[in-house]
Amino acid sequence: MSESKVLIDSPVLIWLLYEPEKISVKAKELIQAADVVYVSAVSLWELTLKFGKGKLACSPAELVQGVGVLNLDRLPLRDEHMLTVLDIQLAHKDPFDALLVAQSESEGCIFLTADSHILESKYQTVQC
Image 1 (cartoon, one colour):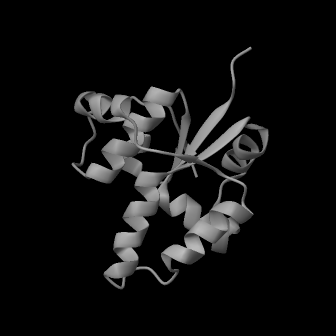
Image 2 (cartoon, rainbow, N blue to C red):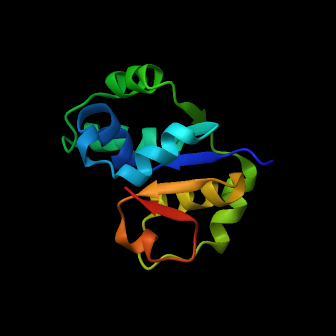
């Protein structure tokens, strides 16, 4: 039996911390049933940059603390993720999204996102 793994998108981390009512029932069920729920270093980096630009209210310290409170596993950026990103084909060219999808594909995760471009792609995703 294979391990059930989920990778959450950057906005999903914010919702889990501050607006859990935005998470779909299906996504909540997947999170609860998963053997591993990952948050990527890529998401933390993206959200830190948004905070630095004044586009996000919660600080990097709050995010790190929240990851601990939620008991999420951290997914570092590995060599195979960077190699896989070359094969990722998304309708938009957001480098953070491409890396997150590459990580999800490399690790055999279901990617939880609200991004319609990613949801409409060929990758294993579930709408949040």
